[in-house]
Length: 506
Image (cartoon, rainbow, N blue to C red; front, side):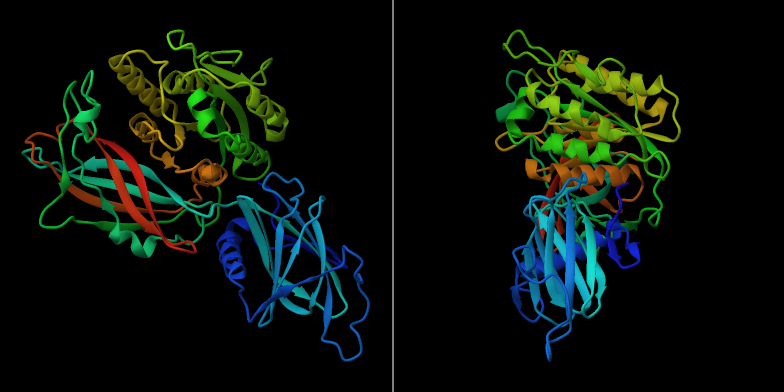
């Protein structure tokens, strides 16, 4: 992983707290400063524009010193025009902006300080800086992805305890907030308010054939359901990570390059998110040991949509010798090339199938995972029955190889992510998750959470529900319950998060 916050005085760099642990504190402090936190707010005295860069505090002046602050973005590059806030204990909040090199110098009161930095979709901080009178102190802040509005995900979902008449089923969902934080969960004390939305089939989308909206089963089948009477039974269980100890794993990252997803992500945020995940390789420390990159899309002659990728449906990088590497940054040029390789139609299942073949053919040094960024669209698997058959085969292959799958679903405004295959792929093994986004700006934060989940660092809340259908036998074995679960998350402000799920009945 990247180094965390560091502080340097006369004795050299000193390692501060792990930034994974700092993020919740840092984001809370950033929210406070945005509202004028502390006892007041005023601009800091920047020494970049001619101010004094040190020396004694003037006669009778309050004790002060100089902070030389360097801010790096999530992949370690200088964070230009990042907003820096310095919070003296019990004093006014001071502000500054970094220059083109990601640096700013500020004269601030001596004493205990919190130093925070934020930019577009990233943030971080050092809440425990101690500055002496007349001292010059260097602070390095390595930021991480963040999002102003959290989304959600489902992990390790299953169904059990079906009633004898097949009308009622118990569903257990591991709910997580996608907010780029793996500290104290921001909705654990509200999880008992989580609810599964009632579902009624939509006949408007049943032409030319019935498309299930609520319960997927035999061709042409669908059925409504709602919370069980007299009230929905909700059981909540807090599930923590491994207390800060990362699990070792290897990752194959798959990026959807179809026209649909490229249109929904015009700023190519998925590529910035890809660089972040690839940068988190470390052959020595626990966590992501090795990683590699793949991109997928397929041709569709009928619609005239053709993929620009050199190999279809899946291109693995480097082209001349695809392989896992402990230097994920070596793949940055390949990531950049994807900006010009957009087009074609979705090919989710064929791409994951080939990715599993690749992972299964290589020796592993630990856990193995596939992270997929996609809308869930798949015109590359054939007819509906062909796609179902391939999906089940891919799930079986994932389970046999022990490869965990984390999906990041994003479809963009005005379109609907096809959540059934993405959710079911993530449930192939215990240890997968399906994350769902409302906006492309959430992609970097989702990638941070995908990493944390594979490292077994992302906590989640297990919530158990009971739902009931008026149709006898609706929840028969082999069918899949489709729906949406709602919960409230309050990382700084409170938001209602809605997450699609799909759970197969054993």
